Every structure is written in C-alpha cells, then in structure tokens.
Length: 403
Image (cartoon, rainbow, N blue to C red):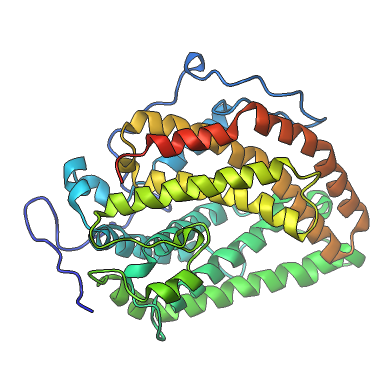
C-alpha cells in the first residue's frame, strides 16, 4: 500500500506539529461562535427535579458549566490554521496527517503531570485525561489509514492509549463518584489505623489503581517513538477494512459498519460517519426512555452508549467544525446536546459510586447511591422527552454539510 504524499505548497506545511504549550492547550478554530443568549435558547422548561438535583433546559448552563462547554467546542486541531476551502480539499489521510501526530506529541507530554503519587482528587488528572481522550478519539476516527497489525501498529497503539485513559479514569472515579468514605476521610493525612471498607479503599484499591496508571504510562512511553513514526505516515487509502470493522469503536466506524471512501474528501467521510452515528443515537434515546431504571447490564449499557455516542458526536464536530454548513448553528446544537452529557453524568457518577462502594463492601453507601439514582431517573427521563433530544439529534444530522 502506498504511503500518503503530502502536498508541499504555500497553503500547507510538510508536517503537523503542536508546539510545547501548557497542558491541554491546542490551536483553536479562529472564530468559535459565541454562546447563544437566553433569548436565543427556548427549549421547554424541565420538570421539577428530585431533591438535590437541578435539571436545566438544553443549552442553559451555569457560568462554570458554560466555560466547560466552550472549552469542549474549542478543540479543533492543527489543521485549523488552514482556511475552510483548503480543509475541504484535503483527503481523509491528509486530515489525519495534519492532526494526529501533533495530538500524539501533546498526549505524551501530558503524562509528565501524573505518576505514582497522583491523588484521585488531583485537578491535573482531568487535563491529562482530556489530552489522552483527544488522541484516542482521533485514532478511532482515522483508524483505517494506519496499519492495523504488528507490534507497533494501530491495534497496539489503540490498546495502550486506552489502558492509560482507563487507568486515569479509574483513579479519578474514586473522587468524582462522591464516595462517602472519600468525602469523610479525604486523600491526604489519612489515619493509619483504618479498618473495613475505609482500609480497603486507602490501602488496597487506591494503590492498585495508581500502580495500574504507572504501568500503563510506562508501556506507552516505551513504545512511543515507534508509534510516532507510524502515525507520521498514514496510508494513502483505507486498508484492512474487514479487520477494522471487527475492531473499530462502535462509537465511530465500527458502529456504522461503513468506512471512508477513496472517492470522498476527508470532511465528506466524517460527515457521513456523523450522520449515521446520529441515527444510532436517536435509536439509543428511544430505548433509554423506555427503561424503568439504568440498573442491569443491558440497561446500563444502553444508558452509557447514549451518553458516549452523543459525546462522540459533539467531540468530532468540535475537532472538525468545518463539517457544518453553518458553524454557528452547529455550535448551538452541540451546546444543547452537551446538556444530555452533563445531566446523564449525574446518574453515571452515582452508578460508579454504587459499583465502587460494592467493591469496597460499603453496603450503606451502595444503597444510598442506588436510592439517588432511582429518585433522579423519572425526572431525567421526563427531561429527555421535554427537551426533544431525538429531534435535536435529527437537527444535528441535518446541519451537516454535503457528504
């Protein structure tokens, strides 16, 4: 298979590069549309929430959450230095060449901020994990233009990046899930004479998760030079498509049983992927609203899949805002859909808390988390219907440019 020949002309450089910069910083799209005013957002008023919860209309955020959402939408990669007409002409492999190597470099640099002494409440974990997530998502998006097999092929790289991402998440979950034990004891200056579930949390579970992170980072860093060389030379056309169909993420090409086409531009392929994934998300949404609760393996997967799929749609469109015919309208839809990510996150945090408390043998905290989920669930489902999430997903698909 021939390697991609990178165009050398005034509008493009030969290589992609992200200069050394503060953690989680990236070149951003030059003109992110401003957040819509209150008058511009007119979704239905949500149902009264359960005690302790506040459900907002889609697209309506607190000041802190608005800053978070704006950050999510400012994720365009190094290709953003090009004009839109230039980006429209790039092939799928050329888009990969523009963005993926630089994002790999950034993710690798971010790992210096975590180590064997990282605490579950360390604020740096989020920035590091975001850098790893951005790389992982790009690997999923551009999987088919990299060799799948081999010691330093896409398959091994994806596996090692995922191991780092999951290890960061598992450590962070000990704090974010709101475990009663961590809330009462904290993560530093903990008494040495703990017993029962508290001792298991601080003396067994936390050290295990720290070590898992250290091991995952060490393996990834040891193979980084070979992986970086592979990413610098994407294949001219998609390859090993049948194998990729079986291995690719279900939130990307693996979920839609389709692949980029050599006859398409890069943006056309991405638009086609997003349109198909939006259709799957609508089906997920219908299935979730039919659930009595998110408990049980099948129900929990359906619930998680909707949140992850919507977040994937938002992320990919944020990486490549050029996919929308009208970027300002697309950004408005992304903001509204991000409300689902946040509101569903309240339930997901409590599910994590429930499972972790069960692992620790803290039955009281497990029961508390279960009660909170059951109290919130009917309000969340009513919110989902009132905010017309399936209609927003259709609007998202309709807002994409020509595939």
